[in-house]
Length: 211
Ligand code: GRF
Image 1 (cartoon, rainbow, N blue to C red):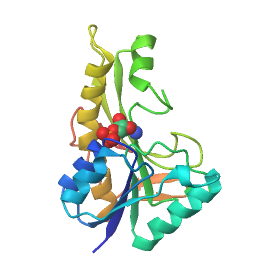
Image 2: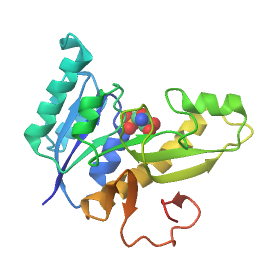
Image 3: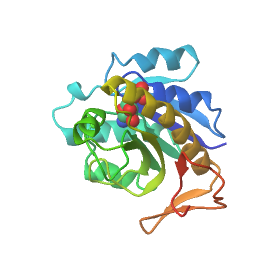
């Protein structure tokens, strides 16, 4: 059976949606760079091994990245899922896991990389927002797109209302992308996302690469 690890830094709602999705693979570990991450307790209660690799315990990013990579490799996962993991990862780390590491970002990339995406969307006055699952590459919040979901921006939206609308979609598309990967349908070939057996029947919310 294939396995995956999930990297978190905080709340862990995407982690919960991944574990609750009963993916065709074992969750080998949830790893956090913050000991106080709320998601750790949730995972532990469900019998998922949890590990803390505290970035504050390392002198620099390279040392942290090396320790994190070693911890991940110890579990031998087929797939690494960044789920609200709030540390920038260095090039060596990213290249080591290239093609088997996914991230979820709360915007329709390449628009609005970085933090505070919902606030930025409201300030920009645009009407469509959403989320993106992508393979992780060395540059922040970019990388070949696997799947996106779009939501409307309403005229009376607050940042928190918009965030909640996007998060509901995150909880759908991230397990979907992870499932594709664990079913051997999703891969990265020469920098391009390949999804075997893709159909166009997903309707309005989901858009896959060739759809
Ligand atoms: C999500 O919005 C995710 O897209 C972003 O950080 C947030 C994490 O939330 N990368 P959670 O910890 O999964 O609840």
